Image (tube, rainbow, N blue to C red):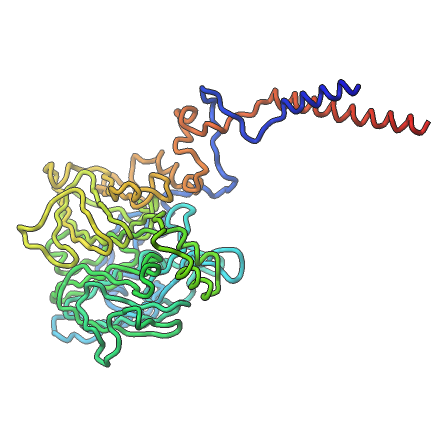
Length: 545
């Protein structure tokens, strides 16, 4: 009996199933790996506000069509053009903007538009730790399932920071990147930072014509020695004389605060009569109310804003609530010289979300103006497939015709800005013809999301007939099904985990169980245990006798 038990135990040990089974030289059929989440797969386009895509007029503001999946709120645009003090309360109530977020008064030069512009900015934290539980608050996904901690400048807002009482998602005004700000040459502009954050910050107007001190002799350069502490406010005063694409950012502990997202594009428009410029372009992308000067030379205008995130830095605000701990970890434990760029964003999103709101939508024979800024730590090598664009300005300085360069890769250093003229004339140089042409950073890491590709700042220059009714590119269904999936960027899903080639290119280590092995193990182990119990009972009975 003991010999039989020993033999059964040996058989059970030999056939015991393992957690991982080694694949043979010829890979067996793979099993598609998906997490237990029932919401891993997203619809490519939520189509939440299809009515926002239409060209329309609100309070006298002409707003161009926006065919993309997630168009800007047209009521935000109306307020951004006329100011909260010059639109109806009905319009203002359709936004999250405060009544004093933007006010416009005094036509000083008598040319039909206001020249005294008062802007109020706050600071919002996205994807930060909540003191009320083990979850993030003011959530903002840059890609499916990807929520790095971010800080952003935002126009002063009203109401809740969240979409509604039953949501942890930030309201649409609170998003990356910090808003593109537009003013007109010669305007008297007052920018007030109301520091609603728990750390000190400033606004430095990089490249923007401004005096070193305000009229009252206070700081006007936003340097670290003049921080705006929590609960305090400070107003910067400018009257820019030079038009161009500029920049703004926090200059307190610049290495950290800049990379956390406290930076944005600042554009000074040419002075033109009746030139009501769109002061805020929330989330960058298409400018739906271009300036008078732009409309004279271009059919469309887009802001392209490139950013990167170090997940180690971003995680600091997700692991603590105490400002002292955050300041300690960010300034004394975190070392920027040992950091990495893990997430690469265009207009606040990484692929595939760039397909929702960072697509350039074109028709044949258009001239399109692109303002491009690099807020990454590394170089951007912008490449536009199927087209060659012309550099018209560097860092806000217009180039004479003889110095304007046409090319298909544009090197953009950190904090540098380019203005580009993109022509869609099908002549083999400016354009190769209609299509769904990708544009992206040609530095290889730029098209990855924490190492997963496709990701990063990839986007599409789409000719309008090749978009569906929701503004998503046609002919990409298989790819969209794959990448609009949290499992893909969580690295739980094979790159080619579905389709005809899944057995060859899918998960090599995930194979069907060896049912014979399991049955033999179960029988041997069961018989061995049964015999042991039987022997024990027999022995116990003999002891009683």
